[in-house]
Image (cartoon, rainbow, N blue to C red; front, top):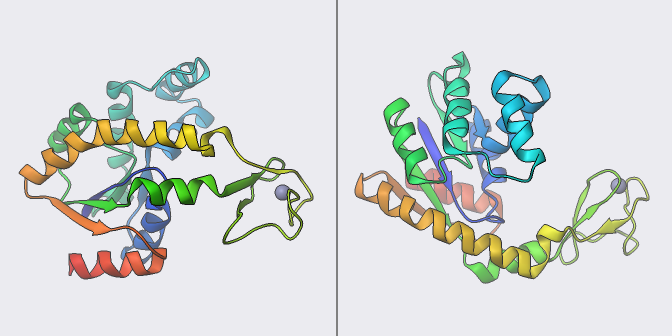
Length: 208
Ligand SMILES: [Zn+2]
């Protein structure tokens, strides 16, 4: 089955995709991972991405589509996949539809206040990258990493004003996609609030 996961930042899409691909033996393809791998392997496309990211720009649709196209032609993607972080725009969705149409587009619904609550309590270790949460998983000693003793801090991305900007961008970009896939009868909306295992159960039930 070919599936696209949609949902706001902080909806837990990546975690859900990891759980779902494990059950379904499909590759989890995220554009973030594709960008990082292409840059690391210094492919022709990767060098272009590297230059754009280094200058703080957004990777344009044609380049993103080319990377996704390359990845979807790999043998492990022949019987299906879960795409996460792509498509983000209507031109990207149109390109994908022409290349390898998705069977289902799963929209994980999480209200803005829930996202803000989740992300604004997130902390990360500056040294080893371990993730904490001030409510659900605080470090034993405030501000100090359990694993390596490094400084545990709030990323700029996880400050409330920045979270609200990311949410606004997401809503603006993705609302048209939800409509677009809805009109093609591919959209499935799942309540994304709760423990990832519970959300996965809802997802499996909805697909059954
Ligand atoms: Zn650490």
